[in-house]
Image (cartoon, rainbow, N blue to C red):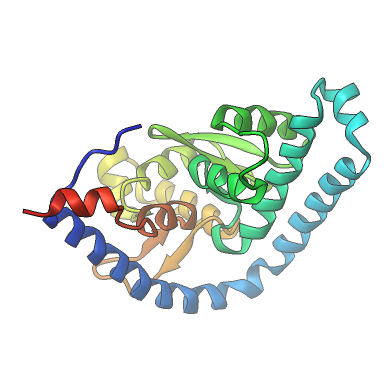
Length: 235
């Protein structure tokens, strides 16, 4: 897909956002340490769930072929998806954009392996979901978030995730203004995302507390300026 060109102002804005993200990351890391002890029991539970998933894959390709009706390609892809999600869970809490998952899977397969599309990933994830491993697909804007932990997410949580897509974070007042919710409803949703490890609380943000969604803000602010964008910004 052709990328739309950006001007010098847009590049400067992106660079400023990256710098702000790095600065905010330090603050968030401190807050995250304070929350880790509360999340330890949840992590153990999730680890047990993934151990069960891995056991199913160790059972062999025959299981996938007989029970799920897929061949070697989707068996191997399913294993890769679980490996990527496990490796990144400490960073994103168990939510990852479909685009980032796609990039990570391609990186792990090497240039000589059979190509994998995002549609292939979605099909494999649906098969994983059938195993009861906690995997799910959440529509967010024009893309998807892949859930890889057995967290209870209802429509309220999904709507807030969609609202956070633009900036990578959301606030109580933003939810109230955009969704016309009562304060308590907004707080309950955000507290649940914190409890499940899917959001980080930033109490030092200006104005009011920011609830950052790691899966979203890392995807927004970690992108590099491409050579094409740099050339188009030249006078």
